[in-house]
Length: 228
Ligand SMILES: [Zn+2]
Image (cartoon, rainbow, N blue to C red; front, side):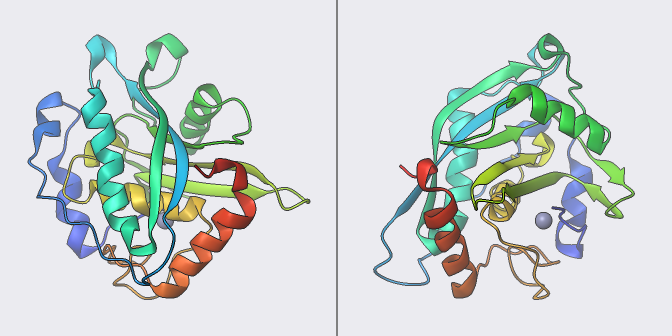
């Protein structure tokens, strides 16, 4: 659910501001991580991407920019031969939907989710770039910059699923890993005590073989309708 402000990332948290100029931070050349197991069939999972924009189109992304964030995420998930494919991706004016462009609480986050994706997802995982937010969440005791989740109903079907990240870090060097981390939650992966892991306190890009197996098994069993 959260990304602890580890030493490695703490410095990055403060560099960014909600100005378009900050989004032009150069991104290092992409390096897709090698699959941890050879012979895994590529597992393609559909997502619907929504990026909220502020006044005067603040934070509006070009189609290429929208796509590039998934590319960076897929470079991390390549370890598990998992690829997230955008079924749709678009900008949405926060004001037009009566939403806060800068969510300041869990309640605000819930409102964004309910407005952007009112229906139970059955074919694509909702992914939201929900404006520049970075608020202290007393429930978790951390500054919240992203969340990812899934809920099962009594019949083993997914009733809620999604990932949401703050936009100001999306175009930092860790942007792909941040979204990859939240999507890992959506694929049932919890945090791990191993710090040097995508789901660990130090927030590296590494996934383990058991994590890949769990995520792939979850997708095959609970997300059949989401697979391309
Ligand atoms: Zn987390």
